[in-house]
Image 1 (cartoon, helix red, strand yellow):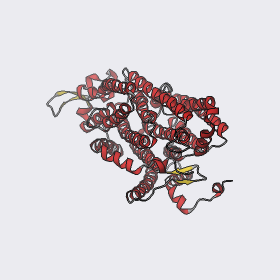
Image 2 (cartoon, rainbow, N blue to C red):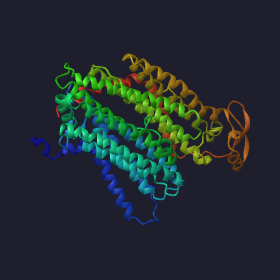
Image 3 (spheres, one colour):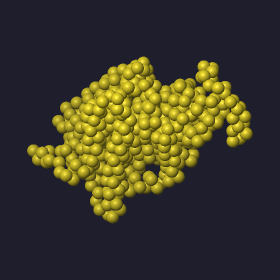
Image 4 (cartoon, rainbow, N blue to C red):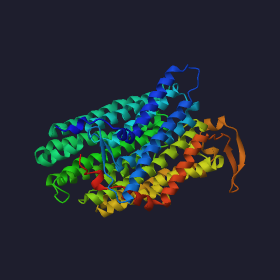
Length: 554
């Protein structure tokens, strides 16, 4: 019997779990105070308290990362810390992903503070403290090394997301989107649970490390069941990250959800599940491939890994193609960004699917590529959703033509949106360009030339998709807007910096301090990531260690 399972948490362990505990305490306090306060008292303070809790949680993660980095630079062995009987792991992999998730959530809350003030959300307090359990589920996901803990985190994230999509009770689109999301999301969770049950049945354990050890001894006997298990898991996770062909729900859900919630689903929910998939592949597949030592490659493990790599890369390629081509004729911005998320899910799957039988090099380089593109995608997408929230509040519709003449009404917003769409398209001098370049170079280095060609072709096609924003902002005026929208606004003559004189809608673009800060911070971050890509990648590679993070003794 493993007595380690019964060891209680120590004070130092609680400190390591400070990011999660901070969010739990904040949710409990906010919900109790919200229930006790009279209805007439304004609940706007809950947004600030939610933001404070997320920033404190982010600060504890960064403090732990810096401490581990300084230890690695000093030559100390920075090991993996396992808690709760080995079911919860504190390592550099999880900490780096948590930075992205918490930073993304903080930006989403700031958009919400500036956006939902005039919206039809009846219970603003509930909205804010539903965001915290959602990101808490994401944090649990990226640190889980046990199927039970993993599923609890996944469902905490999923159920909170269902409620957030349905938070606008009077909006028919929100109700319809939430209904589709709940039904399909529950089906995806059933697929995941069914796949996990096969893993448990084959190995008799729910711990990922022990599953890898058991499969190392008996993989040949369980090949059909193992393939079936992996198939169920990939179907479920494919839905959760909106990868083709499991993406059909995302345009409807994004359109029905409040804009900040759509941003949360695009970045935080997608990023957490992708990180979970990354950890599962390494713990289970690479774990039992090299169970006899880093030099002894299991033939069964190699065979399965080749097939899984092909499946993941095929899903990635299909996601790029479907997401990009379906966005070509899309005029509703939320649906367009949802399809952009489908294509980007494909790009983010590539580092996971690339298969090199040198796992040490594979892990360090491919994870740093994955992390760089994920954080670049986070800043780009959240910034775009922030501007969408600002513009849609002014124009009262969410179509692409709502951006018409934006340069003449709010030049700095137009410039920021240009940075975001160029990054999504992968144009040089943006973070998106370097992220796609690193992924492309990885595909070429592993001789996946077919995938590299698909990446280049879909990137070229996406130029046309994202150029629609630039065309509306810089080459259209109020005449490009719908007749009903133009009739509402009085037009006047405005001299642009280039000397152009023309009718521009008098619709005022009001930018709240919180929303403006999100746009500015995201735009600057996209540029900084593009200026120092190698430095950031080097820092991540220095921090990461295969021996410490993946094959440490459980």
